[in-house]
Amino acid sequence: MTIAAPASRMRFHVDGWDPTYGSSVENAEHGIADSTAKVTLHTELAPADWKPISPSQVSAPGAVLFVDGVRRVEARIWIEQPPSAPATSPGNTVRDARMALCASYAAGTVCCCPDRGAHLLTIDYRRGLFTTATNAADVPTTAGTYRATITPDDEDQNLAVLLSTALQRQLTDLEVLVATHARTALTGHGIPEDSDLLVVDGPLRGRTHLPRALGFIKSHRTAYLPPDLHAMIATLAPGERSPVFLMGTSWDRHAWYLRLPCTPGAPWAGIVRLECAADIPAAAAIELANLSQALLPRYASIEYKDTRAPQNLVPVAGLERELRRHLGNPILLSRALRVASAS
Image (cartoon, rainbow, N blue to C red; front, top):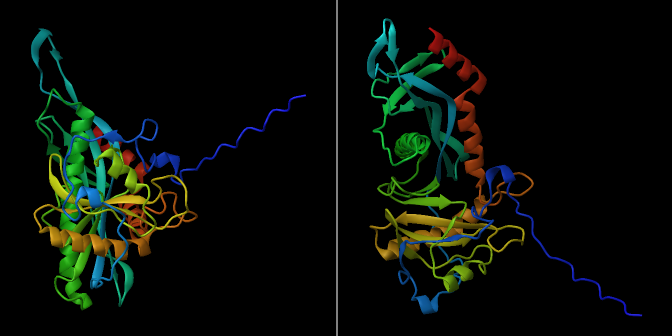
């Protein structure tokens, strides 16, 4: 009698991220998409010499500032347009309506410094009306005024995407504002001038003019490196980083990959991408890469505390909670908008 050999057991890893946030690899179903970005690989090492880089000794900054912003659409509204055609009968006119977004958004900064530890340094929040309707005006409510931002119409772009982009621009501007105010506030902390490091949660686009600033990208949807070097990223040990490279899409920046401390698992578990300005010398970019490698792992989150661990850094997670609290109760805000629309 022939006895079949037991089938080999399938090995698998569970993505630690809460599925409601997607995945740390955003195109997980189809793999990371290839990029059309222009990449210069020899900023730090020649491509043939690329290898994981271990941490090095660096001087710690006087303070680390973590900047983040949150946004929430409170309601989609329709703004009536002036009559677009003459009346076909007495008292009858042809009217059009444009969709718009009423949204709340907030940004803030957490300071991590030797004397006071991690503490909230600056915070600001706004409410806005985002639309292509040229007759739009501010919407006052009992819960605050939604300031009108009129965006030029673009027939080639989906309206929802157009308005969402306008909202994101306003949020980015607010993040720049709170970051600038945070550095001003550091003068009362006894921190030497120009000795802080600014870490922006998300790409650095629109903020590359900020000195000593890093963009911190938690998830990955595009493979920017050639296949052999892209595969090398999965071999990084916790605390190791890739060499620095220069990347150009619609904007230019220096970039590198870093693996944060995490439970062994999926090939890209704990991998983040860091960015800094393209117009600084290569040596300065490498210095920032070494600094990020020494500092950021200590702020990595832990799985049982955060469903986006380890990429959702602990100070950023706390800042997100505080920012969402400042947005207000969405039920009350929706009710205030309905009351305003009826008055």
